[in-house]
Image 1 (cartoon, rainbow, N blue to C red):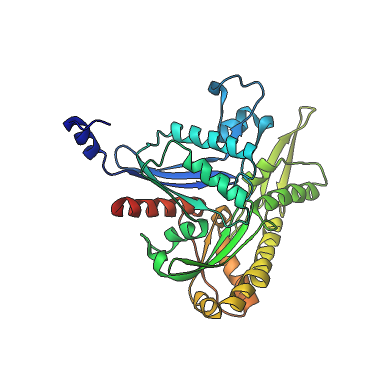
Image 2 (spheres, rainbow, N blue to C red):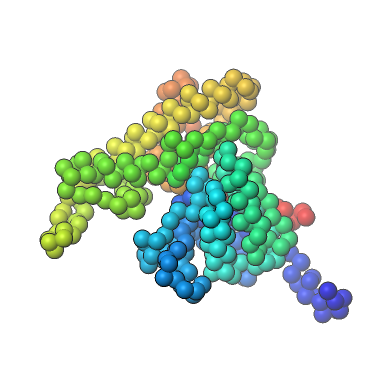
Length: 354
């Protein structure tokens, strides 16, 4: 390293690193960052990497939606419950994340905060840490914070007000249901289960549509997820019609009456049962004061399932019935990107103080 005036001037010009918030998700990955003009940007893509045996060089690597479109038969899931569980998935996730960083020209001179899922998987969590630590970004600092805390930050204020509050956060994710109580930034009684997931809803929609059409329509899971994301609505659901093409070349039109909302209704019942019989009972037994205080405040709901219109209010109503008390719930304007947004805000604070 030289100590020339030009080098010092260059260092001063880049003395403030770029804050970056990262959420590597089992279904989608979100990165919130500041571009060269100081404008905040959000990258939102499927967590997918093409692994076609015919790919002879990195030029054939495809990620996200493009990977699914071009190599659908050879594009697998990289993360389970938000972490790469083994060495092979860790290596693939590193490659995916590096491609994403390069695609959006994320700078090395950056402060990176990433969301950590609440899972009991030491190997997977270590692999997740390595994926971020070994990436080309985060030269200034890299920190991990609980996903539920990161996701709650945008729901509870314009800055970092959540750090000073007492609340319960519930994450309705693609491959897990999480819940946790927070008291002035400290985590209490973290709970996680893979028995109630958004992916299960997608698979249930496949079965429900097949039943509703007497077996004449078999959806793939991606189409079922698209139906859920496009049509599901607890406030004002309307049946919709679709057309599929038969092998004979003829088109077949069908209408989905209950094939989307039926599975979602069952999903919410399962969420409420898991929260009341497992999480809230554990919290009350271990920390009654925190339990009582948290339930006087709005429940914070995050995760992709919270994007469905009316779902958050319906969850609050069903929880209230089971707990025999009034329950209100809040979520951010964009629940699917809330964890990355919260991580970005923390990174911004760290760049201002470090």
